[in-house]
Amino acid sequence: MTRRHFGAAALGGASFGRLPAFQATPPKNILWIMTDQHRAGALGSSGDPVAKTPALDSLARSGTSFDNAYCTNPVCAPSRASLLTGLYTHHHEAWNNATPMPFHVRTIAHYLGRAGYMSALIGKMHFVDAQTHGFDFRLDFNDWLQYLGPKTQLFADEVGKPNSGSGLPEIDALWRDFGDPWAGHRERDGRLGLVPVGRVSKLAEQDHFESFVTRESVRFLKNHARKQPFLLIASYLKPHDPFMPAERFARMFSKNDMKVPPTWGKTDLSSVPAEIRNSIEKDWITPELLNSPENVKQRIAYYYANLAQADAAIGELLRALEDQGLARDTIVMYTSDHGEMLGDHGLWQKMVFYEPAVRVPLIFRVPGLTRPDTRNRTLVSLASVLPTLLELCRVPDGEFDEGSLVGDLQEPAKERAATVYSEYALRTPRAKYMIREKQFKYCFYVNDTPELYNLETDPDEMRNLAASPASQETVERMRERLFAWRRPPEIGMPPAARPR
Image (tube, rainbow, N blue to C red; front, side, top):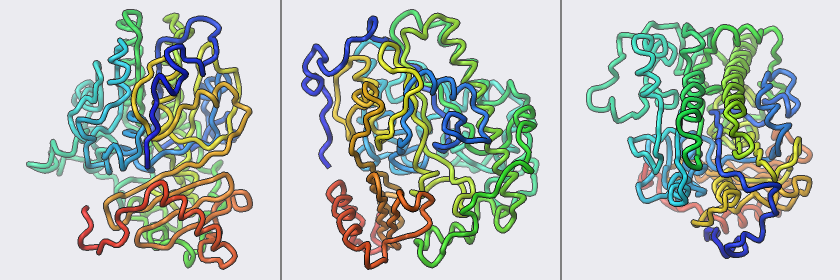
């Protein structure tokens, strides 16, 4: 795939002719708010009757929401690398949650730093190693654990075993030489797999990572925000596991009020890839969810409680932005790295291309540009976030895999024809790729059954049409289009020879 060049020429020269005249001077700051594992529909503003997300709902009412935003890779580290670089996994080379992004790959911090911005990253970014990737100011899990001190024991019990996705350890390699230092020192909770169904956290609310991220983000705004233009990324862990919210949020949701997803237990296992079938039949991550509607409903309740806690922390941060008099000069963007299946199809977590795992919230509020309470239905990629922010701040530089969304922010009601892509487990026997158009989604598995879904007639993706004789023309067309974007290099390689 040829990258799209984003620069002065693409913007109509130094005058930025493609940008409209802002009502005042262009906003000079960026507040990038992020959560982990937030599925697109789980927002009050998107019509979810269970979600309690007043802060994000208010943000959506004040800006433009993209209803069809897709992550580039349905797992943490590669997806986050795409957000920061504007590149797909096969270009930024952060292949999975265990491989660091190379030093030479530039991030938004590099681009804005050259333009005089101060950059701060507070919270989770899953960098895998100790690179700072251009950020001037950084606080992450290790800083939170230092804040917790002896109370780290409570979080170690919640995580249960090493889990860098939840920040203990923050960097796997730190424990590689001598093993897990917490082995034999955790209080066991009887879980059967990696992640428990959930419970109320023993940590006080002010000690949760979400409270820490908000506190330190507000401190950054107070201490540094007026000295020069800034990029502040405030990145929360929740609603990602552990599904152990603070008590007041757990009380908001009862399992008796939750519903088992309509697709749970209904998937035709003979028609889906073996990978999907095995995940449904053998949930090694949380075996307690197999064949237990009560556990399913309890898990869903704790997910929404985690989300409500993240939203409350976000609300505090947005109020601080207003209180500091910074809102009128600050772009606010909200998104998540990937979604959560939450029992749909009998699946949990992410790592698949079904809509709940690969589609995420994306909200922009740009002073002087976005109109309140507007929605855009164009298919867009999270790889577009970086070029969009650079264009909004008039920082033309770089080559990216997707273009800017400024035109979509200008005309949110206009839905343009578009295609989105995603990829997973590259350079392994499990490599798979997704292409989605308005009507159809096609998924190619290097060593498994392909999938084709008609999202207009089958929005729940329950009927795999890939083997249907009537769909072969569509299958061939979409495969050719996918391979024109990227032909999987894993094709034709014997499984034993594939790099892992």
